[in-house]
Length: 369
Image 1: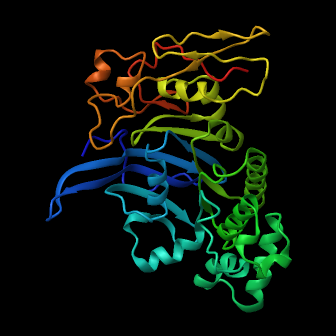
Image 2: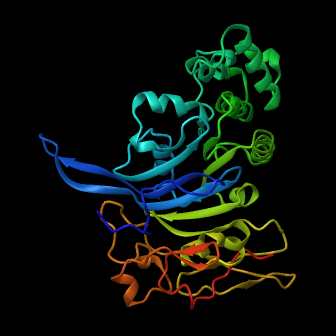
């Protein structure tokens, strides 16, 4: 197993404002071969990830497909058991608990306090169940409500997510994608959780519907004092809803910062490349495609400057990552040290962490104003 990205402890946080802290989390999937399933390698899906989320705040977890962000979120929900590491959660009943260490009885007790909104509103809803059964299931399973109380709470949740209470006896196939995602949100919020893991909840929706769902999530967060882990690959969506952003690449965190600071002053070349792909809501601003070796800016008709950085090469294989920094084969600023020494995640500015050997000397471009 590779060395951890940051030094961590196995003790719960001492501050009262933190709701979730992930310490040195690993998930390695074995690669087997032959009739006897001999293990010949490991896929390092998550490789030493650490972060924390204050209560009532939203952390965005972003990166390319396959970087390990969804695996991280599913380990927090205990859908996957981590290879090693700690996930500290401050439950309203049990206090601080280490989720990977919980037994079945304790895990069942905290289930109502941790819920998930899934990416696909079509496959995540059972077509054979009515809205009453779908949204009421977490209430029924956890012994929170039943009978008329169950029906009343489901009707109330439908109102809160913008659907009519008369829909309780209808099936999901009669609704649009945006309405189905509202049902998924209602199901997640029905037991009044503390933490909600949003696994790309708007990526399958039209752009106009995305804005409605994001605004709904923000309104519900303020109403119920929710804490979100928001997994996404669309940085324009993350900018709208998140307080802090953590950028992942090949199972590792490469940068963590407050949203505004990250967008204006990125410190890692991979973050710079991601931000250069964010669409600019200005028809007069043209963004040229710039090769990996020449991150120069293009000039628009109104004098503003912007650049589209096109990275060369392929994303590193998590089963055989390159030595040193995993991003160095695609990085335009890589030097010999990057090819041999793994950079550690360190705090370069207050609250701004980066994993790059040359972070102090690089001057990277953020999102133009």
